[in-house]
Image 1 (cartoon, rainbow, N blue to C red):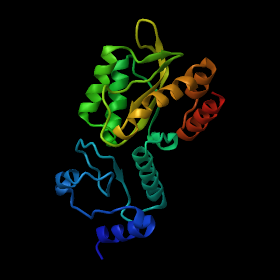
Image 2 (image 1 turned 180 degrees about the vertical axis):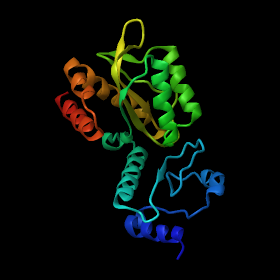
Image 3 (image 1 turned 90 degrees about the vertical axis):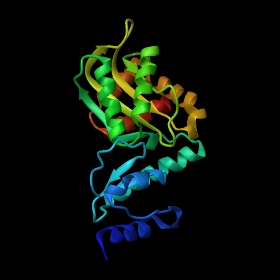
Image 4 (image 1 turned 120 degrees about the vertical axis):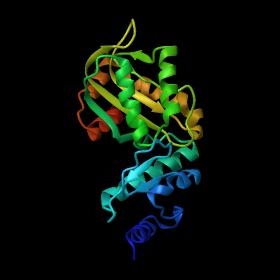
Length: 233
């Protein structure tokens, strides 16, 4: 049995009948795969192309950590399609960055949105929309926090990309920012945008809460602290 067939068999065994596995494809057929519009692309080799479909790089032997990431992504998709806000999967481990040293917001936004593109959560048009929205009016909300977002929603996938700067930088004429949370909101939960934004605002309206979040240096501690502050509000 070839490695791709073995991987497919392992996935079927681990994920059961609740997930439709389309098949296996060589890298040169990536355009064909994209046209099939899957929710996720699993790959054993890096995909450098800019595509709007989330991709997960997995081991050919499918480690437990691979399965955990796949199941988490599937859960996120399920919640999006049901119109629910699932903070556990909106916050993405691979989209959590600390000690960012850029001196202006343009470079910060470029860095964060480029990483969102690389992970398949947004495409170039959404990146440009996020930058255009920021030029339209500042997304700083006070207390060293900014919540950039696009002018429109994305096709399917939602996430919050977190960037913590090593020191506050000037964001606009009235605000400095050290905690940046870039939102990518899918059509399926677009009606929940106000609820999501309101929750993020409530969590960060207290300067003490923001200080606690900024101090976190790893994803797990940040998320635990976020939930803790969320429950207080």
